[in-house]
Length: 446
Image: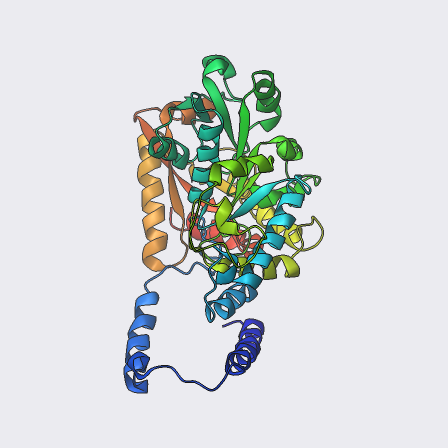
């Protein structure tokens, strides 16, 4: 356990225990008690079971989108969970509800919405996107929802849940949407992804936005993965064009449990127009009587929600400002530089080759010693397995249509429908200093 987190949690829990006892002496009921011996045995077994995980916190793990929460974030979460507040109605957690509102206000300001918005935390990015698409359906009940063919599968799935027809928009080789392929009169909302979960691609909001406005189409931004990279939009590390227009979108989703240093689950949905709150209106005979102020359950599809998630996010935003040179910016700078460093290594060597230059901190690469797409797939899987088996590194795999792959790499024989390559998500700032070792470890297993 991180010493700073351990000390902070210990001090905080002691203070909370004194607060609880100030209401009068009490002790937990005997039906809730266990012997020390039994508790020790169960937790020993639990510890052994948990060691079956992959080392997500260590830089040797460069596979999926599993970013460890900051130690002080999970310490704040654990501290709040000793009370277990519920951020539905204000009487379920008055302080944690206020902290959620304050954290949401910071995120809304960060994305350019200023003081006019509606938003709340959710259990995940999936639920946040569900709410955004639900508002899309309610706003344009007879219209379809469009999203690119590289967007997250959750959009197609949520359209099915909502009984709305979803349309996939083709993306050209240069990354632009083929808007001529769809009829704008049929579309109510267009989804633009800033940071795809496959390779971290940033879709062209600057292209889609004027087209959507011309045709009266809403814009929803799925920034579940990439949202916090807005801290770097004025730097020379990323192309900030799309990030500069985020405030023009009708809704935005971001996942603080990805790059926001939060424990699972913590998603967030924001709406530019507060009047969409009318779609959430409902009646409860017992819930909303403790205050005339807005209860978060009145603007959320979810009912019970962990107040601890709001406490942890609020704490994190107090520690790490949403700025380029302070707080989140320096962290994301290291993640971005790690991806660029791995890109340079794969391009300068002879055994590995990058699929294309990363836009954020996710890189796809493959064995350059292969002669065909089927051999690339076979070797990629071998490299993946070898690292897992000897615990030297942990990667992920990514499947690409061969037609897409050979457009960028025509020198390889196309003898399969798809090609599987290696993929690394450099979410941890520690990755910047580790990628050289990772590259060598992979090369040694080719």
